[in-house]
Length: 206
Image (cartoon, rainbow, N blue to C red; front, side, top):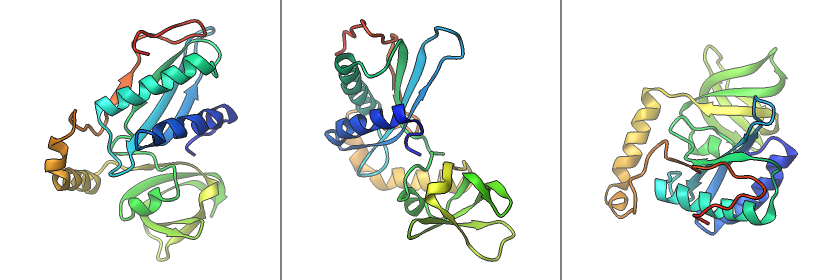
């Protein structure tokens, strides 16, 4: 789920290595085509710190510059595109099996690539994992449901009071550590290149 298409998976391999040097994790890569013929494509990268799942604007900008430098040199994407590097946000997508452990106890929406019990979409409270299956407590169901992680094509936390409370508690727990950061952390921190990149473009920041 971190990458859906073969093109995204190839990019992810490189972006993972770049992010690793900055102690960051790539949460998700999406390369979307333009809705207009000949229009610019959109490359979105979500990232977070390995230590606490947050990221600040400075770190987004650094990762964006490093990825842009690689793209300028290797030219892995045809045509023009816009690059955006951002945080996953508080109602973040869940893209790794470990995410279902980290965010256990919170409400989420899950979509599968095939029918399970007659449907593909589920909503409930995350209950961790069991081997390579995710566990979720569904409303009105007495038993915890298990779903193969490989079946999941989309999963996301639901923004509610419990999620907001956990986010506030996490920020309070960081306390003095946040004061030492170069930039304030934002739940929706993002950095977007001002100019579209193309095969011949050069960015003054790189």
